[in-house]
Amino acid sequence: MKILLHICCAPCAIYPVDELRAEKFEVMGFFYRHNIHPLTECIKREETLKSYANKIGLKIIYQEGYDLEGFIRNVVFREKQRCIYCYHSRLEAAAKLARHGNFDFFTTTLLYSKKQTQDTIKEIAESVSRSVGIPFYYKDFRTGWNIGIEKSKQLNLYRQQYCGCIYSEKERYYRMLGVKC
Ligand code: SF4
Image (cartoon, rainbow, N blue to C red; front, side):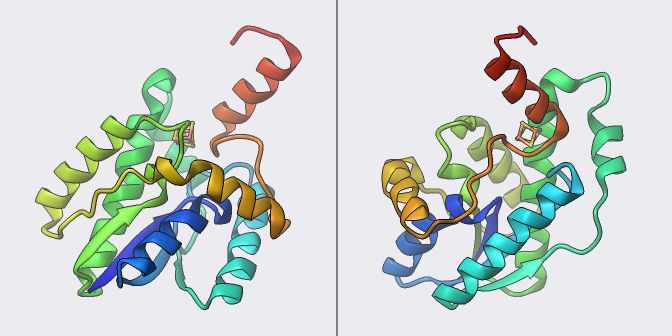
């Protein structure tokens, strides 16, 4: 069975790829770029993923372009709800690609992160699955949270300090400085 795995970054991909391979899936990755800001950070995460993927023999489709402007336009005035749009855009892109490429399923490394909202991701993915017409594979990868972190440290992978968008960067460093958002 072929599965397309949306990948947000290399450290978050470690555990899901290992699990899916253990379940005998033929895994291919999909790296989505528009929500990772600024561009230098996006390139850093992409390069880290390329190097890790080479190491483990994982094929990846890298999204073309870098529509930071489109991302901002879609969340402006709704910044507090931006993750809904962000999840939807990434999952929909993955589902469409999976359908186009005749995959059996699509899924996402977002299900690995303890910092994301698992129920919302699942709900959006199931809705996208119905509208695009490709099955979504759900698994709570958070059970491997510590395993993934340990492995990423052993491999000395670049581990980012914030989720991705420029708003999350501000929140991360405001928190660090003790400033309220
Ligand atoms: S915080 Fe993360 S999930 Fe939410 S909008 Fe930003 S990049 Fe997307």
